[in-house]
Amino acid sequence: MTRFVFFDCDSTLSAIEGIDELARLRGDALFAVVSQMTRDAMSGGVPLEEIFARRLELIRPTQAEMDSVGALYVEKIEPDAAKTLSSLRQAGWTPVIISGGFRQAIRPLAAHLGIDRIEAVDVFFNADGSYRDFDRDYPTTRVRGKNEVISAIKAACRPTQVVMVGDGASDLETAPDVDLFVGFGGYAVREKVKAGAQAFIYGMNELPALLLSREI
Image (tube, rainbow, N blue to C red; front, side, top):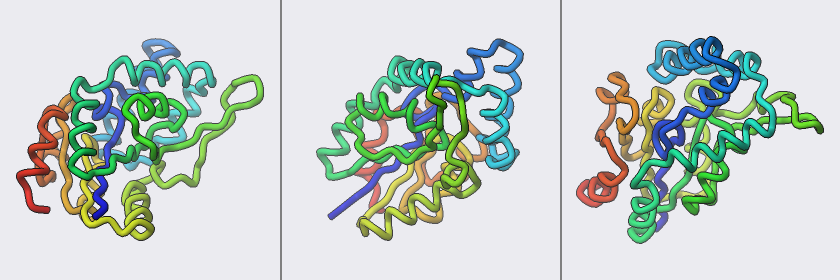
């Protein structure tokens, strides 16, 4: 029996929004612009593909800056994430990170949590570490992209159960393609997500008991 639990990363496994932290390095004015764009997308007010490239073009992060945000993900980890993942593994669940964030920045957090599979967007840098581009074809850069990734994994692995945990509109979109969508409000309660979730939690420590108590 194979069971997958998919986790969003930003504002779920860690307190930060990685793209916003990259913008913060460019000053308060750009941070305000980019963080508003992020909030609009996360709440479902603006399609993700309308702002994904624009935010990166405004910031143009360096490889070193991406590394610094990777360290921040670990520093701001959800307090009960590691213990929760240990409990879920013991119960037979395989965790996967699925994110509209950046693979290079998320990798240290995934390693810290022992998560082998990261489904996130690659950013490309020049030889001197300056920003070049990102993987514009990767599914999680667009609306319902997480659905595409989950559907592909389901087709390849044939899991018996699939759960998604996340805080944003792109996470809620996956509800038709998973057995249970769990909204997460530990850092940001988005009313659209809370209203549409089949279950809603405020801390990762609530997740093992929730999955144990529900027949999915």
